[in-house]
Image (tube, rainbow, N blue to C red; front, side, top):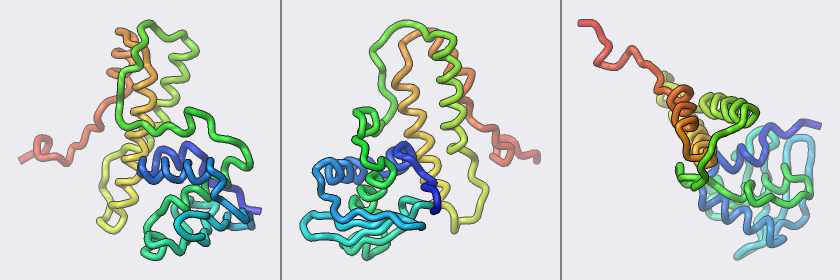
Amino acid sequence: MQKVKYDIDKIRFSTDTGIFERAVALFESGKIKKFMEDEYGFSALVSGTHDYEVSVSKKNFDRGSCNCYLGKNYILCKHMVAVAVCGVLDGKKLSKSQKEVPKGPASSGKKGTLTKEELSEIKKLISSALKYIRSYTGPSRIWFSYQASLSEGCARLSEIVSSLPLSRQSAELLKEHIKPPLNTNTPAFKQG
């Protein structure tokens, strides 16, 4: 059987906030019926205004089908996200942090410094999040894929930054690890 190529964080950070929150509400209120897993994906009947037949790929949670208005127009809907959430959680409940979607960086409101272990973990998380943010040099046909990656990276970084205590250490950490990429193709760098 094929493994699922995403987890709850992938869904949470790369889905529109409103869609994710509505999908979580569907999942938590028991609206997912007849859930099934096969080699390539998940399928279920999702109760809402109507009963919607939904399927989602194990490779990409945003690939699948739903017979709701959005799904019929090949747009990711809350029903598809709810089924993906159900699939990755495998019968478990969502924790409070898994339900929260960062809406932008905010202050943690805490003062203090990080331990060596915490600092090391934050550095790893920042490096991981920055992998989603890169210069775009590709053709226009894959622009939306790039935009999705950029949005996911920004959401991941927002959560990290929002968890940091207010301190000089945090400021230095961010200054050291979050630098804009140097793009030598910009007009300021062109020789002429």
